Amino acid sequence: MRFAHMKRILRLDRVRLRGLSGVRGEGDSEEFNSNIPSNADTPEAALVRKAEAQTVRFILNAMPRPFREILVLREIEELSYHQISDITALPIGTVMSRLARARKAFGDAWRREAEK
Image (cartoon, rainbow, N blue to C red; front, side, top):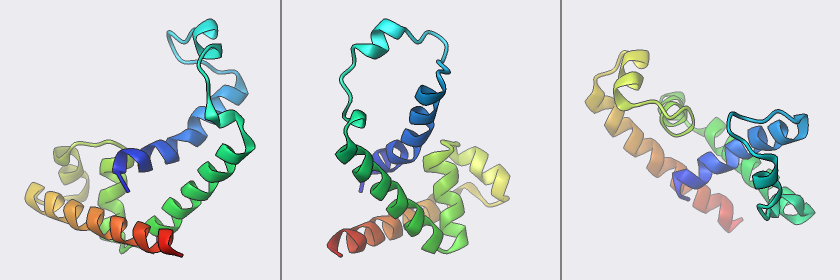
């Protein structure tokens, strides 16, 4: 699984909720937003999105805390290696190697879940 895809899955809820509440970001155009075709409108797409989000959460929760922490900070919170190093009090090299191992573990777990 690509991590951009993982981030998209986790952020869809925020975007969906913002749309339901009527809150728009700066520069959002009502006309522009209404002209974009969306798969989010179909029940099938919502079901797939919900299942993927649950799988991502399940995998993250099953990961060892150090891997989960690094992965969430980098891929979901989009912090830099340096920021993660400051937050976790780890050397930047450790952050990078732990992130690589966490990404591999996540990908392996995603593939196992997909085979079920």
